[in-house]
Length: 284
Image (cartoon, rainbow, N blue to C red):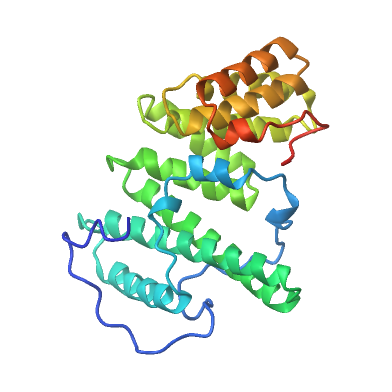
């Protein structure tokens, strides 16, 4: 993931030799928090880990490096980006790599936050949460720049999808829907369309907690994802289809989705962890 563009441009100049105690706005290009911060992402309904693994192809490419090493690479990429003219063919690859480095930083900080919470280290947990949120905002900024400045990039469908994932985790449902809409309308044949349909269903199921009329469209979106040939997305989509169909009062569709899940993907984690219908989106 992070080495794909190394053949097309020289490596960044050697950064200063130091080990920062933690990433900060002065050490990287992290976007500072706005005065009116959003509610913590943890307060929102969440997907299960195995669902994220099926939906986010970036996770399998992340190297889970030490934070200090990752920050050094980010610094080098920031320098390289600043020195690369906007018309350069190398600039989109640098932007993409930089955005994915910030996503890796975000995920690492989030793992550290959860670990600190488990050990009741509240101060460390708050600090790691701030780092994760700042890294996410910066990744969103870089993905947005890539879309706005390089509209003809052949891998733009992937950028729209990655942007939607980050918007979703930031709690910005409207922007996530916009990125998914752009992906599916501009790239209807993209391999990511089934994943986008799942995320659309998930966003609609969240909206249904305030407006029950959204359950039916959520059911339809999950059905589109479940009907795909994507062996990673289809089982998790069938699981959520069964769940949201029950919430919508469609017992027949719910039973059929459960049957398809257990018969077609009997060894999947989705089949092993059925969801019970509840008052709204939730994780078992």
